[in-house]
Each structure stands twice: as C-alpha cells, then as structure tokens.
Length: 219
Image (cartoon, rainbow, N blue to C red; front, side, top):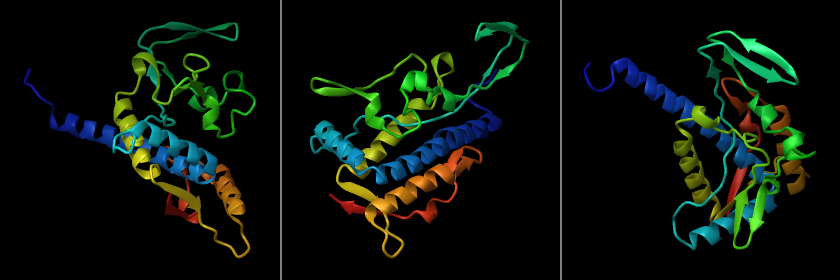
C-alpha cells in the first residue's frame, strides 16, 4: 500500500474543510454579528472581557461559538429506549439528532431558552467566567463524544481570533435606514429579520443579510 492520499481523497478533504469548517463558521459569524449589533450591552461585556484577557496584546480570548450538525451510522443492531419505549434499530440505520431541540430545550436552558442571552449561560467565579453546561450533551455545537467534529478546534480558533480582532476596539450597530427610525427601532427591525428571514439552504443561514446593513465605529 503506497503512502499519502489519492487525488480523490485530497479533493474530499478539501471539500470537508471548506464546507464543514468554513461555511458553518461563516454562518455562525453572520448570526453572531447581527445578534451583537442588536444587543449593545452584550457587546460592552464582550469588549471588557477581551480587554481583561488580552491586556492590550493582540492574542485570542475565550468565547463560545454556535452550531454545527452531524449524523451517526449504526453498523449493527442496537436498541434505543426513548420515553419508556424500546426501539430496535436495524444495521446501517442513520440517526439524525435534532440539535436545535437539544440546545433550546427549556428543561435544560430555562423558560427563555429561545431568547438570545449569552450571559445567562455563563457562571461567574472569583476572577473568571466560564460557560455553564446544565446537562452533559445539552450543547453539541460540534457534535459530541467519539463523533465530535474533527474541525472543532479549527472552527473555534478562527471564530475566537476574528471576534477578538473585531470587538476589542470596535462596536457594530444596525444602520438607521428609514426617516424617523430610532436606533432601538433599527435593532428591533434587525431582530425581526433574523427571526423571520432565516432558513436552511444547505445550512441554517440568514437569507438576506443585505437588507440589514451594519455600521462599525471605533470605541
């Protein structure tokens, strides 16, 4: 057996990294920027954390990104018990978990699980803050366990580095586009666009982000 990858395997890996690592993270960036633009207090908190961690040095801080999907294939018969009912899965069954349900289940994340409140998922300790996982497996942004996404570190480092570079000294706000529209009104308009104009194409994404222009200002 010769060493190295075949041409087909190289193309396959290039596709996997461009789709699984770049596209998913790019859509996460889009949602994160628009949510931050509509939540100025969260932006302030993020900037404070970056300044505390970086100490005016151009290094990366700590922030958790969002979603990514995957599926599992069973190669032999397995039994699965759900709600007191046992189901036998035949060989080669594909199981697609509802990651959105996991990550918005009010049993784990509270009654406001569908509201974007990143600070609600952070536990403050003396001198530090950390992400709070209410139940093991409740957050599966890159899948979990042995099926954990191999591009997780690539995605996480890219997301963190970009967010640190953007928000250390800058802030972002929605552009006021209509006469008489207030800054709060612009934020409400963008929030409504996120809720009503997002859908799955190949991945979950904002369909028309160009309808909500943003403006960057130095802090």
